[in-house]
Image 1 (cartoon, helix red, strand yellow):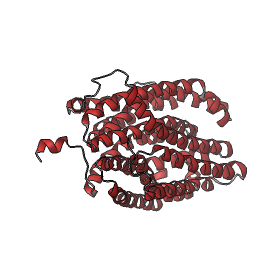
Image 2 (tube, one colour):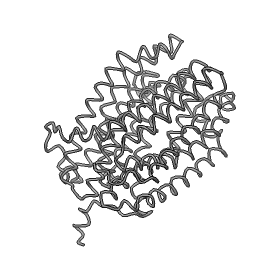
Image 3 (cartoon, one colour):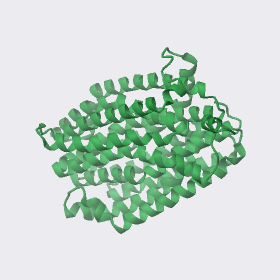
Image 4 (cartoon, helix red, strand yellow):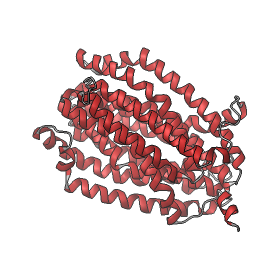
Length: 453
């Protein structure tokens, strides 16, 4: 095969090298929003403790909409990867263009809901009027970053689905660097900028999301990716392809949305039944999941794309072999990070600038969360492999059953019996056990074979 033919062939091979080649840039891209959350929280923790506590609920609220975009991203990624496996590049740009239009429509709905519905949600979850006002103002600013985030996520689907995840790095660096700079100058009022405090973190994140989006599209243009796949060459509405994207993505959108909504429910219960310190501790646990879980999510995204790609090649009989290879790497990395967290929990917690009481109360929760990270490392790979098969309704069913069990547990533990936040965070063990069991059994059953998307 000639070099040109190899370059144009979008089919993937089943190997550890191929897995790592795809996963590392994805992990770097996933790191961006997590770094934004963590950077915001570090600066806010040093600004004042109330800001760090409020950031838990506002951060998870925004994550609900980010998860909706992630569901659309996963559905689009599976479709693009399937077309890549079938070696049909002409279809990829058409799918991508329609997905951008859908994403912007969802972003508009998210902005409207935040302005007119979110205040009522916060009134229920935050009894303190001052905290509620600060959270409401923050969200009304922060939500304007949603269109940029969604376009960023659609671009991820394009690059990962076509095995060009290395180009994710440029936008990631731009977004991460700009978020740190603007967090510092806008929260604390440095370099001649006004001191905006909590709201400064919202504005900094919007600027960072815009710059990350802009940089990667510049890279796509100059690398010829846009021309290769005819991106934006046909901007008119395509009912057939839009329907295909929505049919494929809608179960994933609901799946990811209810997953994060259940987490918001958890944080509301924490806010209702815990101290400000307890709220702040739970917020830092979310940061641990975000930071140390990036590799698990990267390998999950890799599983989605690679499973779909090899099915497109007609290699259904090698799907489980591929999943096991991905799980081996993902779980190995998770075990290493969990070990570090258990050896140096105080070191990680110290970056938030909180009291010794905060650290002492947080360490037992870190132990629980570190085990959950290991469980997540293989559970999410199996779940995203289900996505790669094209049976996204099964994903939604698995998530729904898991969430019902999870929500009952956290309600009983936190609201009914008023147990500790350590007991509350044990819900993660239950969550990942349920998710893994159902995903594993479905893939092993072989019922996904023959599914056409």
